[in-house]
Length: 94
Image (tube, rainbow, N blue to C red):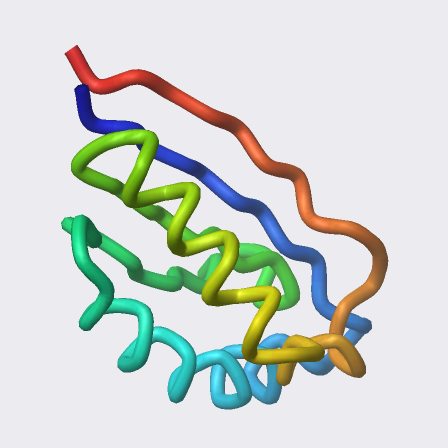
C-alpha cells in the first residue's frame, strides 16, 4: 500500500527562496529512487517562508530505503535555512 508524507518546513525569515533552491538538487536525486512516486516541494504564496514537501512512496519498504539513503547523504543542504524542525504527517493511500 502506498505511503504519503506531507512535510512542512519553516524557513528562517526571508530565506524561503534560498531554502527551495538548496533543496532542488535533492529532489532530482530522490525522484530516481525505487518506489518514489512523488517528491515535490511547494512554497506558500501567502507565507513564502513556509514550504511543504509532498512525498508518495509505493510502499513502506521504499520509504524505509529512502530514509537510509537520506542519512547516507549526510547533512541536509537546507539546514542553515530552517527555522526549527519539520512537521511530518504520514498518510496511507487508499
